[in-house]
Amino acid sequence: TLGGGSVEGQSNRAIFLAGRGFRGGGGITASTNGNDSEWRSTANANGINNSGQVVGTAKIAGDTADPAFRTAPNRAIDPLTDNLGTLGGAFSRGSAINDAGQVVGTAATADVGPFASTVSRAFRADPGVPMIDLGTLAPSGGINGFNNSGANAINGAANVVGFATVPADSCGSSSHAFRTFADALINPAVGNL
Image (cartoon, rainbow, N blue to C red):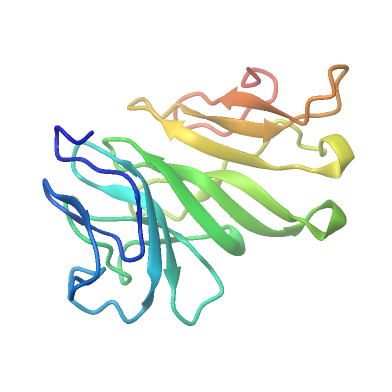
């Protein structure tokens, strides 16, 4: 929302400046302490809350993981405090944040799926708590054995929406939309939209 000073986007070096959105290059660093040597030059911002906390994905220099981040209100990415980690895999992506600071997104797990694919799951990361795997609609695996999910949004009541693999069905769908109850995991019995 440009009128309110909030900006979402991608930059080769993204930082959030209150009321001015993202700025990059030219000596502007991607951390609050002026030292961004731990971060590579790519960051992607996907969401912002009313406090000015930004979520997205940033690449860490010297590490194979590309983790999700959550900034402090109206601050740049700080590699010491903003890294949300992963679910054991090589990446996580913060998709949305609510005003309580709860982040949702998609994270790779250490599990290997069919055809040596990465198993990705929807996650929620509450402030001060490691991210949790929200599960899937197909606990025993879906079509061709895939068992993935991803979260796209979270509201103020902590209901999460996204997509998840479903068991094989007559229409041949591989994934459906889901909605969780407040602060809850995906429930295949009631969460399948």
